[in-house]
Image (cartoon, rainbow, N blue to C red; front, side):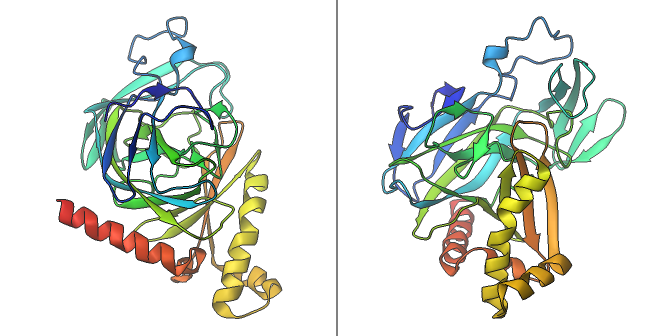
Length: 305
């Protein structure tokens, strides 16, 4: 789908086109540098105004402000080459370096010229719907955005809260591989095509959620790792208390024994943290309707192929 590239997202950004819920659509994305970074690129040669483009937004005709929106990723096809890079001011503890490294993307591996083999784990670093206030495309919130969770690959679904009628789905920042926390500021950045579908839910939630065939994660967002964790833990505690029929104080104790916690990225002004539960208790983190819609999405991807 020929959607424009955006560098800021917000409630008054015009929709590129409209689709119905359950109607598949494809977004074509540039890499996080705007396809600028290559070996030999210099800091002076980088146009910072072209950094971090996203593609969209796509109006979902049945969605209204306040709805829960599930964005399913049916497939991601990325370019055969990607780049990991950093620049002054980007990354965790960067003393001022600008550097680039090129890698070949040959699923099921990503190959480095020095012989390093990384598992191919393609995912959308950025996915969401338009926020209530104008913001840089590289930030994040209850609407999704630059969440950087590696589980957001093919046959996954991101649940977010719509701030405007139509939602306005956008995507970008695709990675072929990444490590926890994205410490240099990038993964294996690559241009890509994403096959997507959006569905509508009718429950309320504070935090984004990611569903895969293996596990469910809630995303906490804050100015620090601790802040992000404190945002998401109350939702986990309430869900666990309801599932086990125990007081929230008891669920809080049990969560300390069963939590899985993953820093997604710590390199932007807002940090993202993914939280889940062990022993199949992660299923309680989203309502039954989410499970039903997710399995319907998975069935549709099988039929589509």
